[in-house]
Image (cartoon, rainbow, N blue to C red; front, side, top):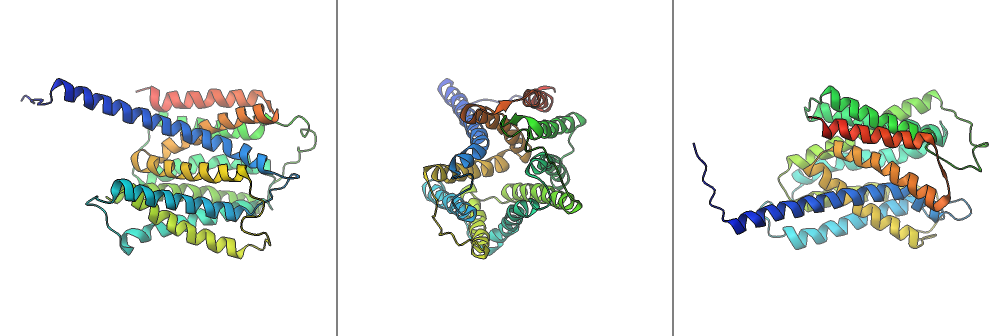
Length: 322
C-alpha cells in the first residue's frame, strides 16, 4: 500500500523549518527554566539585609501567583479566545483546587520542618522527592519505567544528596556550621513532604493532560485557587510587616522570574512530563553552584563535580541509550 504525499517542496521545507523552530523554542524554554531554578537561592541571598529577609515571604508568593494569573489571562485573550475548546465551568475548574491546597500545605510544611532538623539536613533529605515523584508518576500514569531509567533517576537523587551535603561551602563558616540534627518528627514530616510533592506534581500533570482545553485556561483555574490558598496563608501570618515592606529590585526580579518559571513548568507537565521537570531541577543545581562561586566566592568542592558527573551520566542513561 502506497501513501501519496501531496505536499510540494516548499511546503515540506516550511513544515521542516517549523518543527525546527518549535524544537529550538522548546529547548530555549527548558534552558531558561534551569537558569531560573538555579538563580532563585542566590537572588534571595541578594535580598538579605543584615542577614535577614526584609520582606514577607507570603506577600512574594501571593504576588507570584497573581503575576502568573495575569499573564495567563493575557495569553488566553491573545491566542486562545477563539478556541472551540474554550469553556468555563465548575466541573473543569474544581480539579485544580486539590493541587493548590497541596502546594500551600507543602510551603507551610517547609517552614514547620525547620524546628525538627538543621537546614543542611533538610537540603539533603529533600532530594528524596525525586524518587517520590518518579514513584507517583509510575503509579498514577501507569508508566512502567525500565530498570535503566530508574537507575538514571536514582543517580539524580544521589547527585542531589552529594550537592546538598557539601557541593558548595562558605570557607568562613565551615567550622561553625557542622552541627547536624534531625528528630523522629522531622523524619516523618520529610516523608510527608516528599509524598505531597510527588502527588501534587503528578496530579497536576494528569489534570493538564486529561482536559482538552487551552493550557492558558487551565493555568487560570490553577492560579486562581493558588491565590485563594496563599491569601489565606498571608492573613494567618502573625508578621506585622506591611504587604510591600522591604521590597527591592531583586524582589521584583524574583517575582517575575518565578512567575515565568511557573508557566514553563505548566507547559512541561502538559506537553512532556514530570520526569523532564526532575532533570530541569537537577541541572539547576549546577547553575546554583556556579552563581554561588561567582557572586559569593563560595568554594566548589569535589562533591559538586561528582554531582555534575552523576547528572551527566543520568541524562545519558535516561535519554541516550536505546
